[in-house]
Image (cartoon, rainbow, N blue to C red):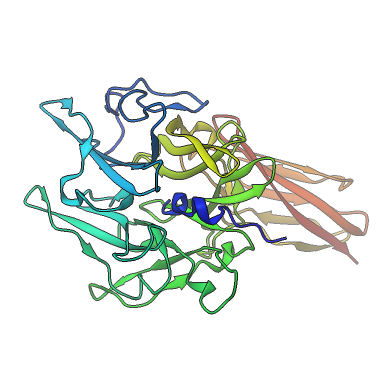
Length: 392
């Protein structure tokens, strides 16, 4: 049975999704470890209030986050700024005062704020993507982004890369289909100073919602939320780009981060050191609590297969020497990975991890499974299997 993340009563929750130094000030909070903790309890994450989604400017001097009304799930965006090295109290973001708005996201250069806004005259679930630009240090009057990014369907949260590409979620693929609410992830590249076309991320299409998208500024990894199962509900998933510019199969994020509650609306600091996300507690069709959490990324980023060695055929009785791509695996936060191999019954196989050479003298015909492994400094490990076929 197809799983859609939210029943209609909760669909609004799907509206959305500096170089590092040790003194970076995230609203005066002590840095988290590998277990997520509530971010800024009592000021940003207030018990009994429904916060969802947070974003910082790259210089970590401005923040914005959303809150939901418990009555009708209408949205408000709050904003705080660091003035004279002291954070102001979060208040309603002035350019959006009186508007029903959700899920703010600062662009990687800090001069734009993307958000979603309810369509006038329609219910709060019908939203479009809007943008506010900073002019001479002040946030200007917001403007709705035109088609093809916005459509007659619902467009939810959006985020941006360094080159201006916008990633967003939309249920436009449901147009003309009965009882279809499933959302997918799309992107639009900036060409000739305009967004002229939209493409779906085909690698992520499933029978479930893909929502709450975060794209890295360099466009080398992506995080989004998806329904996992009845026990875990909604979880955060992650994918990386390989050498062919294709997205790898999305993997559910480490269990130290995802929980049995609904984990969604990710945002990663520009230095890749901290993951922020929203954790919702759901009882029946009611949201009982919604807070913003943060965690360091040592368990988030793991080695991923970037430039894999393909399945290989060698000849029996003939010595072989194969060069292994030095970028077989990559890791967002670790360039010095430790490689190893394991294999079944291929006698005389040798792997030189320093020279990245695989050599051997096969004496038996057959298909042999070889597993390459990469481990990072945090002991995160990823395996990749290939088949070596020995023939006469």
